[in-house]
Length: 186
Image (tube, rainbow, N blue to C red; front, top):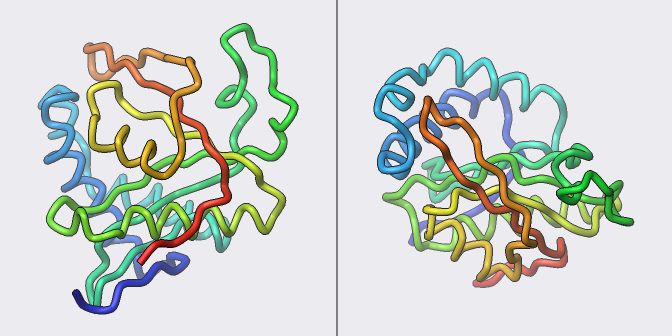
């Protein structure tokens, strides 16, 4: 394997982040999302969203590279209260120190090479250094690969479930949570 690394994203990475998102979703989520929803995703719109996220500051979006190739990315941010609240709306004591993994994607052809783990560990370290103690991520119930990935990192479901409207089709998601004390593994 060529040299693998993770670094904060720059504006030069935006087009590739958008491409990876669209290609990966169309491939990995074809069974979860309606075809018209996936077909309706456009590169210009995705690039605009990622450009704004990257411009908001270092440490929000990270990219994984292998050699000269960008192979994945992770977006992490302080978790909004509604993302960490219990079903009854009560906030946990650590609510101000929780971050949310908004997106963590590795292009399938680059999968199973440690890129996802490096992305999560690097993002977790960046937020731990800012006072973060715990992270949350929402994962589709049917996305076994992502559920297994987070569980392998020591995160697990916390009993909170939500159902989203995915183009007229319900998409059930589990909330996973875990410590930001993650270590990079070789």
